Image (cartoon, rainbow, N blue to C red):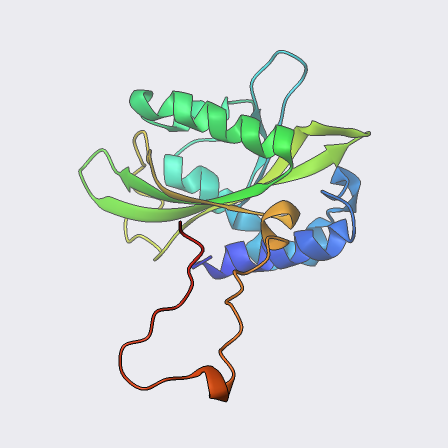
Length: 194
């Protein structure tokens, strides 16, 4: 995570979830993340309906030049990226893992901007796949913020984060040979291949 808003929200989300796969929606206190609220959003979905903005911070709305409440999340993205974003949201919802992604955007005047997207699952009344909290923040505050707006954005690099990912053990190397087994010159080590 490159952006400080993403790191702060993830650390808070991680503390709130404890030993659970995801915290409850009611566990997320706006006052506790007040420094990043402008970059924060919450997505919600009812059965059979795609995730829409339930809340969006002022900086997120300013990037697009409009209030995003009730707008489908995927409509922020260019048409060729929308199916990938739907799959991404489904993975976050169903597998209870977070994602961090690079986003490329361009204003209607052609000014390019790099953003960071963080999506984290939330439980809502016992349902794990209905709510998400996230960050959408530019790597640098654009000079045009408030006077222009982003057009459809594009999905870039992507990485999954969360409890299932964090518990994967690091690879272990074989123990070194004992000193009496070491030889000078060319040595062949058993590699397990036949």
